[in-house]
Image 1 (cartoon, helix red, strand yellow):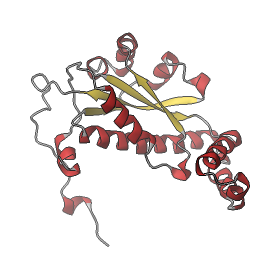
Image 2 (image 1 turned 135 degrees about the horizontal axis):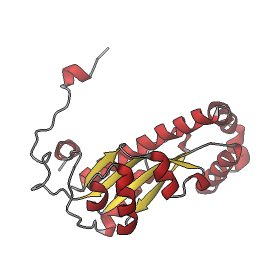
Image 3 (image 1 turned 90 degrees about the vertical axis):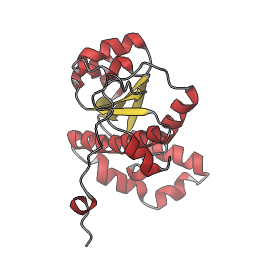
Length: 211
């Protein structure tokens, strides 16, 4: 399938079969998420990859009993940094220097650290988190498209008790807050009322405004 066919094929799957993803396909989705676009390239989030059946059973009531949590192969938890400080910026710039073989002094001469400090670190803590959460959503979208290209169902889920999920996964100790979940697996078409529902989106004329 080409990308448009893949996106027409996918939907927010409500029931899954429990079949496990091949390791290679899971890795492809994770690689796509890792390579996703991000402001300044900072990627101010982490992604928890949950395969454990026992942990997913604990997670399910915190997601209002949604079946995908336990019927999926894996659940990805996109967790944004709760705060962004100078140390995080320095760590990123050092890693960038090592990857690109560009001296750190040259990178700093471009003023990128000053811009990041002003645009992100200077924000109130809550605004730092909300900025980081928006970046996590970009990665979520990349993961969904990557899964569709492999004919793997991917259901984004905002319906969960974030504070309790954070507690279960000990996210506060890691300077993280959960943003959105992504269940990965294979549709159970026989038991999913959405499986044969025609896909609805706004028409091109309704959605796009050419100026």
